Length: 324
Image (cartoon, rainbow, N blue to C red; front, side, top):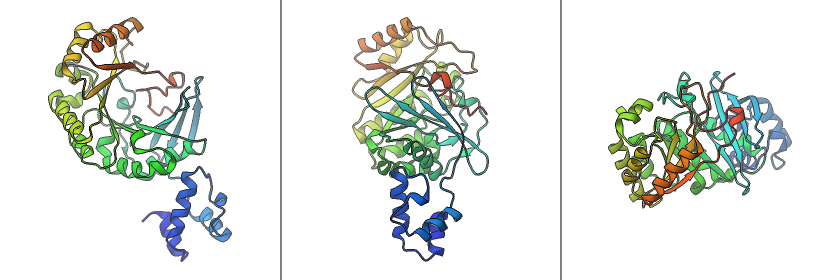
């Protein structure tokens, strides 16, 4: 039972009061006093007894392109970052974290260089979304923030179940994984039509293990087989994320190998310009990225290049590290 539900029970309030509070919060209310269909005495009692969020906002940064990055702290002092991205077509997409830090230590990712804290609770995930909902409408969500979502799938799914009330449908919610096979299989059996994205970043086991140590546990063949099972269950293409690292994974031969590895009927590829972190890597040139994409398209794959958002405030893909 949550603190809110327990407090309502102690006040002898009917069960529907919790649903009223949630409806207001999901619509962007920022304090109990704004919930005008609750009795005034109840609003006052809740203000005194129940924190409005499980997270405390410590800092908020705004990029030149309108991206907003928020640094939160949990009740036990764990840092959490989330991002709101604004697009010219009107989309307002939020990038959510599922863990504080990440245990998987991908070498190009700033979060992977942090110390792992812990899994986040469902409400610690939901409260990231509610923070940005209070700034305006939101309509897309991606679990590409801190952490590996499929290692905390119970909390992620519990949060996803509530996101439609906030304005984000299941079909507009994406979950990105490094290839955590048990989680992929469990997600395939999940009735919510959530999108799956796979962080691949190399077309062979040797290189992928070098930059993504999790590949030693779940090699490419096993990961792609799990993705095939997911496709058969959901009949929705899987997004393959591929960060472009100069001289590491951006050669023509590697593009050809990736094109031969992926079935165009089941996968589409999103090439990600590398965003600077403390790692030793450099990003591929625009010319190299264009040539890589052209080779993928020659193999029939739908390939796009990600529009970088929030790089100047370390809010872009791979940059979340909760620097204080």
